[in-house]
Image 1 (spheres, rainbow, N blue to C red):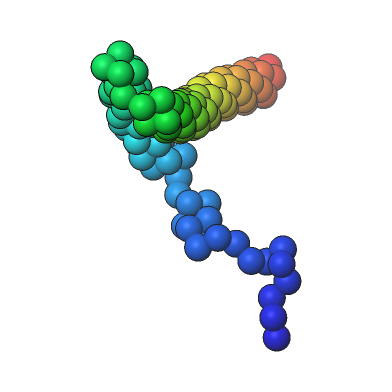
Image 2: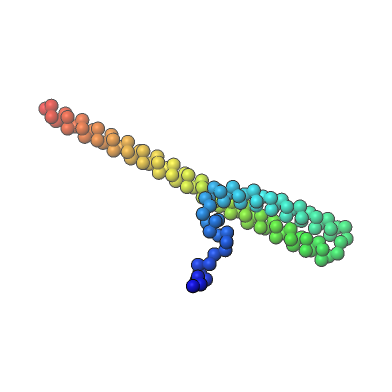
Length: 125
């Protein structure tokens, strides 16, 4: 029995989808920065080839390759920023929810203690 086309996923997609946002951020940020740096070096080399009089096809292809590297690096770094922001938003949301829960719990405790005091004061009268 053959699987449906919708069930077929690339080999690494299941692995990547199981990774946490922190792991994705830790992998994507340095890889993106390295690609940007390498792309800029290749771009510089393409400019050097242009000014030294190399054949046009050589420096054009090298420049195109460098722009692909730079844009790929920017894309990966942008994804890393997205995962980092997602982590920070989750952390702040959890923190504010915890504060709200403790505030509500303390109000509930105060309310119970006031009710007990009122009941005990009515018994003595």
